[in-house]
Length: 320
Image (cartoon, rainbow, N blue to C red; front, side, top):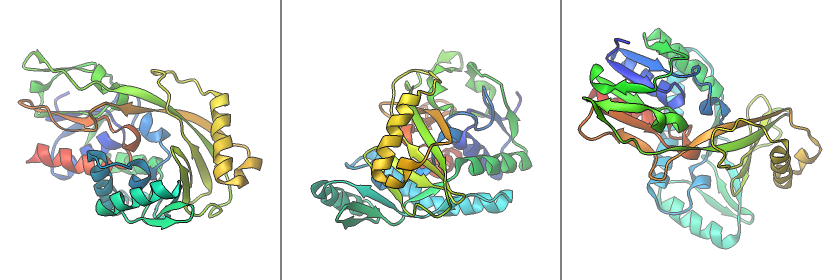
């Protein structure tokens, strides 16, 4: 590879960073051990709900609020440049919780800039949205190719010497800390990240039959514009086990039906898993001090939500 910038990991985050850098005229190679967007990005439901995710003051809460603010313009720009329609909608979400928790969360999240209304059932977030990550991946691939990004699929980069490039970005999700990165021969200690497996199930239903997204704890239901309805999800520390456990899926179905009884008589047409990248001090959106290596991983449950923010931050720092 002779490009001036190499990005390891071609998911939504890696692809978006490549696009932003290519817009600035950079020569970029986007490398992945598998295929473009073939892992965690494609598995995600696409729920964009910072209020539902973060209930205490934290860096995560601030990042989530900012990520949500950036999303509409990011999607509009990507769709316009690529010519690929992207299924994105602000449908709002209902979050079922007890009155005391609802009041506490509403006060905290309102102060962070998240619009939220207290309801008899819990909370309503009018700005919550969903996006189809598959549409985003198709659009990102097109804009990257159009702008000359070299996409190297099935190119596992287990080792990389950063001084051979202008910049290196590690954005390989749950696989990121497995990469041996050196800078002038010195091994860099990358923050550890581990996969947290999640099961999801999908139903083919009539478009518009759900309305706002529904959520209780980590259980949620969302519906895309074509009627495909997703219920999830679990958190399992099972390394990279790709087994789809039908018992786990049945549990998701049961809890989803408690949220929306319509699902009790429906049968899921799809069951799948994904690997969320968990890092105890994540998300890592920064430069490794004293090097030309940038980190863009450890986003856990919020990689899709934080894609525009991460891409803008990393590309801006590299181009500065």
